[in-house]
Image (tube, rainbow, N blue to C red; front, side, top):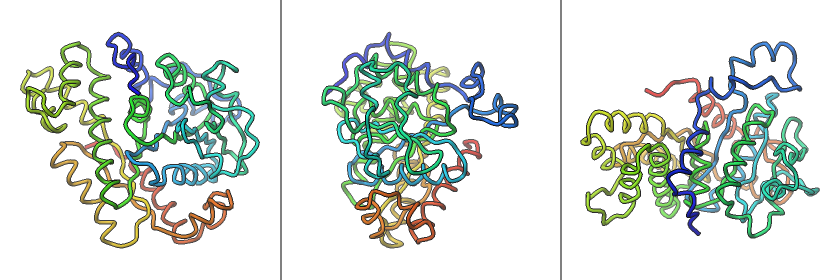
Length: 349
């Protein structure tokens, strides 16, 4: 269902406030109490908690599996990690982690049963890894209202952690897109099958349009973006590339704005359930197609092979990286995380 408030121009600016630079995020934040004195001395130069979003246009592509095991890998490196289940209508991170004692969750925070989001953290069997569960959420919380979404984003910045990984629901609802584009690192998961690829392209287009609209400072620009989402729009705009070209024709200011948005939008593509070298080529082909037809840089970060160990880990409710870290798929996951972290060190070209 459309979140009608989310499109109201005066409200959009509030979400815009959450798109902050690293220096802005940590400018006035005291070091977390759990840090050593040495860590505290360098804390002011670092971002407080890096926010990662794991999304995708289609369900069943392995977002929860990847969120869980990437989180485990980061925690094993000594990082304090929080996994947040934002698939509020179908949460299952707790199953992947083997957490059964859930007496609190995201909905309790949204319904103000407790005031600070950190109160909802649940320890897992992995040291340094915590869960914010959506498992016991009521049906009426599956689509948070605008004020609830803003409160959630605000409280996320207060959590004492090195990394917060958000496992998003499938599809392109406004809430899902907002959480995705608010993140510092955006991970888009797909599998090398036509339906998943098609949905991934739709997700890329929708999230980029949503980003431009959130950053738009005039009603005219917001109206243009909204109109462009209709394939029968009067400007003949069909793709993000055509929208960007149209913006550049509106003058130097709009041209600069368009360039800023393309630089800001840099999601990383992950292919899951890969079975052959031809499947791997799909990732490179999608990267090329996004640049050619959308005018957007979507970086193919890597892949995870199809493996029966995944099913076993789910059935046993224990993360694969705790069971079989040296397996082929375990090595895939370690290599994938290395690629993601390396991407963060390299500034956009």
